[in-house]
Image (cartoon, rainbow, N blue to C red):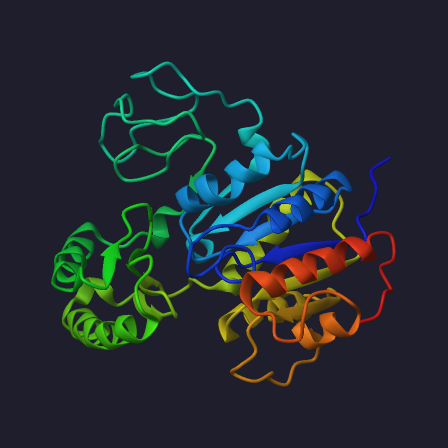
Length: 328
């Protein structure tokens, strides 16, 4: 008989899980996530990040820390365009130098048997091919010609940003690691003005839109979003076991509320956790937690933001396992 989990988690990656500054997942978050997996809690990383980023920066440390092979963990990347399940990673092994990893293809036309691989998980980039266990929505891919023009445009801004070639469907220009946020935003504004002009004159871009975040400029399919990711997340969790009694969504921007909005509209009990609420808390038909609420219960500090608040939330979530009616 399958057990119904007391709750499930839909987690943005940048901010609540990985530091926006270092891109690193703190050890405390890794430990908390492994503990949640051991208790059968389903988790989906619902992110605008690439699948390759999740593999190398999230999945790798989790597996190294002992994530169970039967963990109900999934990743929905590029705002709904790419997804995979962590169960597919359980049997992967590093190959000998120069050989292809199990399950890899040359989907983008590159040779998947190059020799620059490390001893970790497979790569999923334009240059490494895409694993067969990873799904890419072909209908959400940016036209190749439009992407080429955007890549050339980034070349004028390499002092503050870089082209993220790990994205398989969308286009992203991301802030250089260690860059001053103030200097980056100045360059980002000019870059995005030019991107908007390019999209306006390109008929192929009608189905795509520009989305600006605190660390990137994304050109994505119009159907992209955290709500699209929530829909895919629901399907992935429903396919591998019982749906949870209630849900928690967690993010650091207003767009992350779309996860909770989608679940609320479906009639699922949900609480949203905002780990950076400087923009204010919007009116919602569901509860919203912040670092203030977590600190009041002894988890983290009221001043905690991003990954610090994310860790406090996960540690709080561990205390609610088996107590689905726990209060905020």
